[in-house]
Length: 187
Image (cartoon, rainbow, N blue to C red):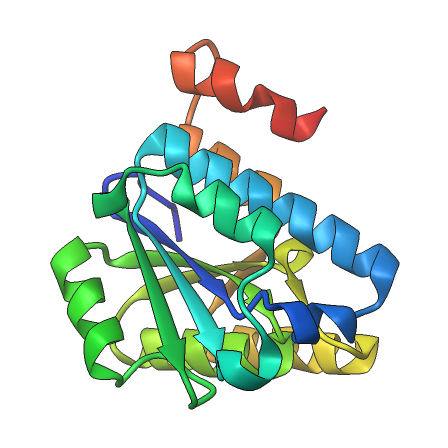
């Protein structure tokens, strides 16, 4: 499914302090870099961004590097959301914000691939949204769980791709001001 900037939003799932500390360090660095690239693309292309936190009292707040990047976006473009369930869809504030955004396509990134990312992506597809999950912008504590999560999402009709795929699908062409601002993502 092709992504269109006027139809697409970004959902960053549970990139939190205590959860991040349990992730493989080398993989975490790449995942964070790609999430930051997606947030930058959202800034340049004016995509709405929702950031979730799973039980922040126990798992901590969103990592500062992610929170600071999101908070550089215009206030009306972002929504922070706390939850205690794994998936986001079906919760009043989340659903209300999705409807208000009028977006029908969502790029979903974050942690953990096989739990909160999977359950959110599956539910969004079930509600008729087009969902893209960049495999390099999601992470699990164990590689086997990451792989299972991605396979389960593909079985649910989630498009599993990569950060660059999503960004360039949204850009559509080189030579634009947006391309110039985002071309560093590939370097």
